[in-house]
Amino acid sequence: MSKKRKRVSRRRLAGQRVLAHVTTHNIETGDYKPVTAARRFIAESAIIPPALVNVRRNEHTTDRFFWGEKGLFSAQYAEENHFLFPSLREIVDRIGEENLFAGLEALAADDWEEMEEYEYAFV
Image (cartoon, rainbow, N blue to C red; front, side):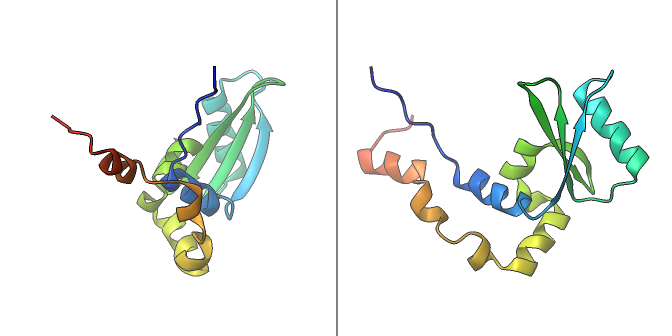
C-alpha cells in the first residue's frame, strides 16, 4: 500500500514562520505536569509575551506552549491562529508579509481549489 501524503496547512506553515522569530525557553517538567511547569517557569522568570516554552516530559516527548498577551496556549494553536495575537501581528508587520510568507503558495495546495477541480457536490 502506498503511504498517504500528510495534508499541509498553509496557515500553519505561515504561523511556524512567525513563531520562528519569538524567543524560546527550554525547561524540564520536574515534579509537575507540563502546563503547570510552564506556568510556574513563566511566573518565576517574569517572561514577557510573546515567548515559546518547550517543556520536556521525558526523552521522547516535548510539549510546546505559546505565552501570549492573552495567556498560555498550545504552540500548534498559535501557529494555526497567529493572526489572532497582537504581538505576533507586530512581528509580521515589522518583517513584512511579503518576506515572511514568500513561497508558501508553492508548498501547500489549497484544498478547496482541489475540490472545485473535481467538481464535488456538497449537500
